[in-house]
Image (cartoon, rainbow, N blue to C red):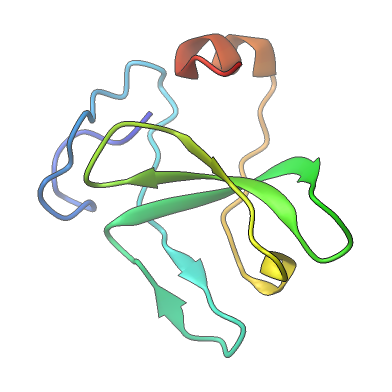
Length: 99
């Protein structure tokens, strides 16, 4: 899932092999106040799944491991996360071992 190496990711970039071709980059996210956090260490991606009126599910990749974590927090819809449109979601689900 993650881009290989440390050109964009900080060290260690554990488990980065980009075998899926997704080439995730560590864009961090935009806070409510407009500041940016976790640039170069984490990659946050919105999903199409809503939690409730103020929260939604998103995926996170960390430089410390290779897991594509599923997360939601209250009021997280106010954050600025990355978006990627995918043509073949079943193919991606298989590659990241989703339930």
